Image 1 (cartoon, one colour):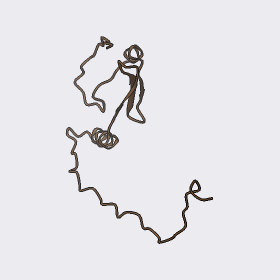
Image 2: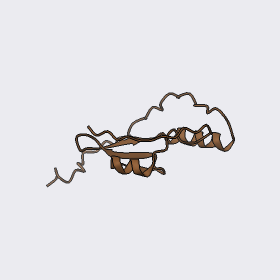
Image 3: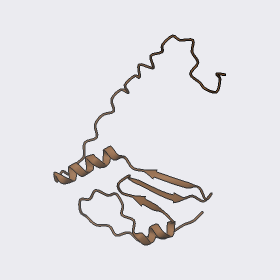
Length: 102
């Protein structure tokens, strides 16, 4: 397991970010970040690539709240998932899989 010592500065001001990691810390972790995609990729102790995904909808709400100088962000209640009606099938005896036809 790899541990990296990082120095943080705490600032009392409204911000869109929970944490800002500097370039030197990212370099020590061999991590790649994408602000546009809200992702951080890094190597695990097993030399596998792991991804931390951000929540785009939550980031958008935070951005809008910060733009309006609001102190709180309202998270909407989760609605019932829409039921997928399924696929309409057409009764046919023709097999469309080329691997099975001669």
